[in-house]
Length: 151
Image 1 (tube, rainbow, N blue to C red):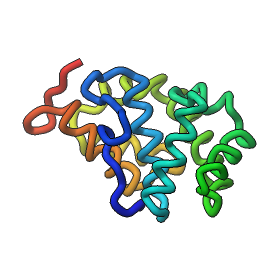
Image 2 (image 1 turned 30 degrees about the horizontal axis):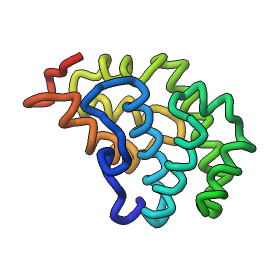
Image 3 (image 1 turned 120 degrees about the vertical axis):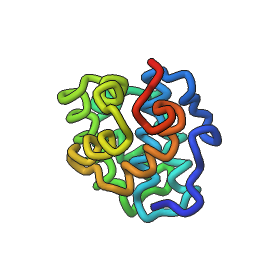
């Protein structure tokens, strides 16, 4: 996991809006921060993806593997560029196929533990990535006892 990883607010992500693009931005950042890489490099990689307007699973998929590798390389995410590009494409495709959107995935998860399990069912999603994502989503999406959420 990236050491001293930034939180959503530091990245300019407005999770409290509960808008799909904002949720996806944090999802994407979580995937980048889950690699054993310096936080600054993960932040730069995230910023490169945002400059390229990859703010939806479809946009990531349309960018394609070569473009993702180039963006990651530009951010000096080079050690993990190939595997991360492959991972981003696979996760985005599966997310769309299974749930259609992150909001749907969240709506189908009654509590954080259920969301964690569903996230980890996606190919290339492990417990570290799920934990990073949930760290910021839990206080925004789930209320007391993790059972109530505001749509």
